[in-house]
Length: 447
Image 1 (cartoon, one colour):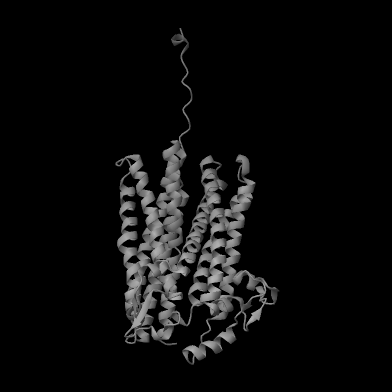
Image 2: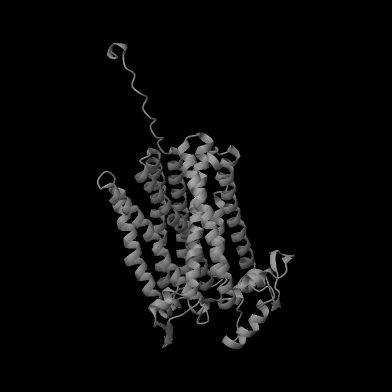
């Protein structure tokens, strides 16, 4: 094992950990804003209780996401200086827009929302949480646009061995980004929906308070709608992958040779003829390129080397992403059906919602592994190899030391996060005060 291997492990470990908080922040912010909007419009106290309850969970998660996200940018200069040198001019623009526009917007209005209770007019206070939630989604857009450029570089030219941006608009409207952004944000809403459903399931097992049913129904609707968005954008992403990242597509299906009417592999040895061709091109007879044939073409185009990603990881990541994601969305649809027409939540459904908490989290992590490992051995597709991106002056011992420190630090943060969330969930939200009983008049006052 060399410094490159450990640098990849370090970036992978820290990114996966950070990515646990990002989708929850994106989806939960909108959910909390929706709850506060319902309170503002109806005046019903249980919406206020739910807003403050889930708002605290949102803030805990947001704080942890900020702390773990800072490390990501430091690694560009520490372990990946050659990469930073090559992409700095292109990457710098969307990252600067994310920090100076989206994150400042998010953090500023979130601060106003935290300290604005009973101080700001209700409409202004409501606008603050919506601005913060929109800011977090806008932040995701800029970061995903930069990430999409690594998979499908556009709007640039290479000058003196460095990528120079020639068209910012092309970078921000990259076809890969336009498909990836709604796909990832939709997945974030599924994660947030799964989290809310697990919390509501826990409390509906303990109490039959109507407000938990109300929150759970809202989360079921959010998760179901997000599932439709993810499925639709996933179809678009598959067709773009066929055109722009054929090696990733072939590895995700374990397809070794160019094949007409290519089958979709449910699992090794279980194939559905023509489905992969249809998903990739909407033509069940189309030819899909295979890894071995692509390897030969890439050797002729880019020179000797192994251009195949880790096919085992890519293959199973794809199936875990689809399987666990579909299970979460399927559970939400089942929940909507079982609780239609104001029917109470069955206890088995509440338990299932609680136990299903890990499913969407595992699905989004699997999706990230598919996306990033499937791009290997490139950091920038067709331009910069991962092996040429690592910092030349960083030793194996230095990377091992920083990896050990980050692993221990993140382990401690994981415990702190779990304790804080669990403590707040167990504490619960204050149940709305019952409506006051009609005042009874004394007999002597009735005449």
